[in-house]
Length: 559
Image (cartoon, rainbow, N blue to C red; front, side):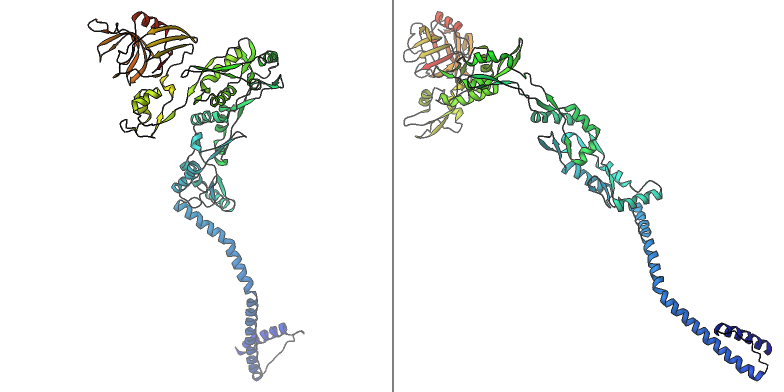
């Protein structure tokens, strides 16, 4: 047993020495037990020391490599971190039903929102706060989407955003989520369009956007008429614009702009060369307008300057082809400008007469224009009563009270300023310029005029002192063969109503009245005041006047 141990030790020692020595190992044979035992002990201690040296060397090598190992572990952890975070985020989003970060509906960021929250954000942004710029390339208008029939379905759009990263395979869901995190994910809003609402708004807008064409016209250079070419106009092509809107309403909503499609409007007349000679002849004719004032029975002549008339000339298509036309808008401007030149608070209703004047000049016949009158004021004088003022101004008292609603008729004071209505209010019907009735209260006479000449003169009776006839400028307003006055139980033949003494109570001109018992009144006192405010004629004369004076004839009553 001992010799086997020695043999093993010898072999180990020999191998160890062979490994450690640079020269070839030599076999050693020890046969003496006294020598072998100490030698074996020494060799054993040497081997243990060698093992410790090896362990220390290994630890030193490991210590040198530790930073590299730690860095490698950190690298592996960092590589796995996105996967871990993505997996965690994916799980969180699937459980708590939030929209994936960086998902947008148009301009609206829906990161981490629930569907209901996202729908509110979308609705506020697009339907409530957003405005669409509508432009024709020249003009622009700002409109809410609802005005154009546009509406973003907030819930449907939010649902589409919520579906990003869901309802596919896990791989596709995670891929969509990572793409959204890195690059963002755009979802188009779900846009609804009501074409009829859009059509209605565009039709209204067309009145603003439309540019009418300009017909060819003429101008005067020196004394010669020169042609001015016409110009194209344009308007909104409503059907094409709606068709474009229906093709891509989403793009309009996202970009906030709608481009209107226009269509040209051709001028009715684009060349007036063929009527230049006729226009030259008209230009050389002196033309004046006649303005008649029914209050003063005055006719005022307004010459039309040649350069003004030349600016009015244009071409027009008539039944016989191209003919001379007159620009109504320029006529209206001229009439408006001439009103102040008439004086006495008079003016011309250009809206009423511009078309008549334009048509008349083209045919060589100029109509008579009726002057209008502005409201005025009156300052109360010493000794004035409302009755005296109404007599002086030519208005029934109730008209002055109507114009001054805060007026107390019994408490007038010196210097008080009263509003006086326009005298036109007593002339509600179109005036007949060629006929006029003039009544003199002081002379108890009625004169009839036609074309400025007196053709009749009648003896009359006006109102008595306690029920007088009102002076002023009035008008024949009604015809009644037999009017009945219940207050006095009178029938008044050939009645011409001329003014309301009080609202609903008409005074007029008529023949000798008859009581219900058949008695005819006042036949023997004509020429003196006798009535309760009306103007009374003998029967044959009243019948003659009744037929001659149509509604609209001016009746002038003087004190």
